[in-house]
Each structure stands twice: as C-alpha cells, then as structure tokens.
Image (cartoon, rainbow, N blue to C red; front, top):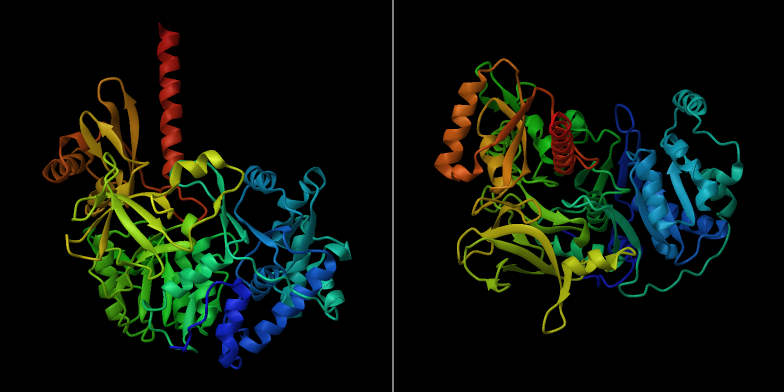
Length: 576
C-alpha cells in the first residue's frame, strides 16, 4: 500500500495530486468501449489532462462558486471534467443520464446551474431547457479517446439523426479545450467545508432533494477506507458504477485514483455485463449492487439456487475484494456467491456495507473479513451510535435502534430545503452535528463493533400493536426458491393502522399458488409472527421495477398501491 499520510482537509484534486506524486508513471485509467483494452492513461497524463481542462474551462468563463451540472458516463473525459471543475472551485451538480424529461427539468430547476456539461447522446434532454432556465451547454462524445474513425463516424451520424449534435463550436467541449489550453490561471484556495458538490436523493421518503457535499468529506471517506482494503499501487479496480451522479461511483473512483490503482472504466454497467467485464479487466477489487453479484447465482431444474453454470473455473484469480452495496445483500445469495468466488479461483469473500448520499456514500463496510451477513465496521473517520427510537437514549447492548452518524463526510445541508435538513440533522449537547440515517441496525452481540442491518425506520409501520420491518420479511421470503425478488408495502387499514402487502416476482409462473402461500405463511408465523402475514399478495414473473441506481423501487409500488386504493374507494362510492 502507498505510504500516505496526506491531510484530507483540502480539495479533491489537491488530495489526489498529493497522493499521486510518487506514482506518475503508473496506469491511472484504462478504458474500452468495445472489446480489448483500447487505451491506458498514466497518472502523469491524467494530471496533464485535468490541468488542460481546468485552464480551458476557466477561459470559457467558469469560475469558483459557479454551479456546473455534469451529465456524464464513465469515460476518461468525465474524470478530467470532474477534477478540473474541482480545481477551479466550481460546484458540481450530478445529473443522471437516465433522467426522463420531467426529472431532468426538476433537477435543473432546483439548482439553476450556470453551465451544463453533457455527453452528446443526452443533449436533447438538456437543450430544451437552455433558454427557459438561462444556462449554457457544453457537449462531448463518449468516444473522444477512441482511435477508430469508422466507429466515431457511425456514432456521430446516429447522434445527428437523434438531434443530439450541435454545429455551434462554442458548445463543443473539445473545441473549448483546444482554444483554452495556453492560458495561465491562478486556482482559488480551498475553503474548508465549502460547497463543492450537489448530488440528488429521494431517499425512502420519495421527497426529491439536493444534497450539499464538500471535497474534504469525500477525501475523509477515502481516508477512512484505508485500513479496510489492502490494495497496492498498480492493482486494478473495476469502475462500472456511474461516477457522474452516484456518490457510490464517485467514491470508488476517488478511492481508486487516490490509492494509485488502475481504475478500469467500462460503459457496461448493467448486471448482465458484470461477469464479462470482470473477466476482461481481471480486477483485484470490484463493487456492485446485489443484482450484479446475483449474476453468480443460478437455479437448477428443481428451483434450487446453485453456482451459475456460465461461470468459468479459476477465471478470477486476482479478485481480492468483492463488495456489495446499494441495498441489503440477501444471505441465501451471499452463501452461493462465496462458493462461486472460490470456484473461480478468487480468495475474496462477499462483503457488504451501508451508506447514504448524505455521508458521501460509505458508513459501514464489511470488507470480507467480517462475519458473513454483517455490515462490518464504521469507517475510521466516523462516530456512530445506536439510538432508541422512543426514548432517544443511546443503546449500548445488542438491541436494535436508529443509526446516527457524525464525521467530516456529513452533508452540509439539503439544497434550499431547511425543513428537510432539520428533520435529520441535529447538534448534541457538545455541539457535535449528527445525522439520523433512518436505518435500524444492531450489534452482532453486545460487545461487538460489528453491526447487522434490520430495516428502515421510514419503511417500518404498525400492524395492530406490532412494528413491522418490511426488509426483514423480504429477506425471509427470498429463502423460498420460487421467489426472485420481493417488496413489502403497507396498505392503510381502519382497524390495524396498516396491513402488509407482498409484491412478489417469481422465476417461473408455473407454480401452485396455494402451496406457495401456505409455505409463506408457515415461514412468517414461525419467525416474525402473525402480524407480518400478507393481507394481499401480487405476483409477477417479471423482475420488479428498480430506480436509476439499481435499488428496488419501493416508492413506486407504495404509490401504486395508494393510487389503486383510491380508485377502489371511488368505485365503491359510485356504486352506492
């Protein structure tokens, strides 16, 4: 591991540079939009490019404090842009390329950026709002680094047909970079805990919010991961998690580059490409959501979970760390995934973690050396405590409670939303700022520093006199081999307050409904109790809907249930 005791109280770019000084000849980025490793970029080249972009964007007119929205995918140019804007002192707003027109306008109206920098294939979503919202745009191609004129020509022709191409040279980023390269610019000094990034979250509440974050916050997360992953300079980290609008992806990029690893970038971020990209890049570390790692799991003719037959024996000998995040990992899958890793020659054990946009991603991490199924330990730069929901007192034994966290990575506030900020941020009697994550966790035992996940307070509900934790039910149901995915929602009830509804995705639609429901009921009664039994079950043989960052979309199904409930009430009124 690199010898690094760099003070993280600085800009992201300065922190990166200080850690890279001794490793400028190492490979920083590798990138392949197709088959094979197209390009490799050294740390020296990376910093040259960042400086070039920073000078050019400054000449273009971007200055410290300007809000610049970036709609990016995982290409080298996106890395240059993000660090160049940080060096200038601009505030980076992470726009999701998956936004539809409504969501894109919502994010733009909330933050009102001065400039939008976007991959050209998404420009049609941006340009319709330029005049109304008063920002300028810069457009670039994901193939800027590719040395294949035929591929570039075909791609450019397609974008012209789709209306994503602009003839205006002032809007083409590469033209701006070329014209601004010779300028000399004095970069502003980083102000501690100044606003540097705005990332979006809906959380489990469905309230769309912009999260204000600082550079030193992300540096602190990277520093806090130092003791958890023993990776040496020159090792490879797969980079498929989107870096532009997801804190998880941005954290992995910054961690990899600040630790002098090769960040193997890929445009193939979907779960069905995960194994092939692992084979291609042969990384020493990789992260993904549960849907990515579940690609290692197959189902036999009897519906039992097995190692996916497509996996090749001894195919991933380099993989040392395999980490899941985004939503809770399912134990029955983790056990098969560990068997699959061993089969493929990896010494990794599946790790899990818990994080949030409001903390620049990671809070607790199981690096594979912790107990199987636990969330591991908190990052070294953080303080955490478990709090009783009723009394507000700290819980010091192994009872479940709300997870509260404090540290340098804590968000500054929600953008222009004091009401939502005050719901989750508070100061204790010593003046320490704490964030209530809304997650229920507990220690693995009363003397342990490891934690396990129980559920979300904002998803919890009361049925009769009992608290219902939907995630607990979901985890149990996934033990049944017919069930692919499940979401538990709540239906209002005059007598019991709420009733559970199960949205169940099955692998095959050919099953005995009564027989399955009998096993569901038996499982629930023998573990959680009768109050958690379903009042309603809805089946589908299709995967359940997920959000842009691959989490199961609980809010979608909860809203759908309430809408259907209102429609049912209207029908009853009409009949009467």
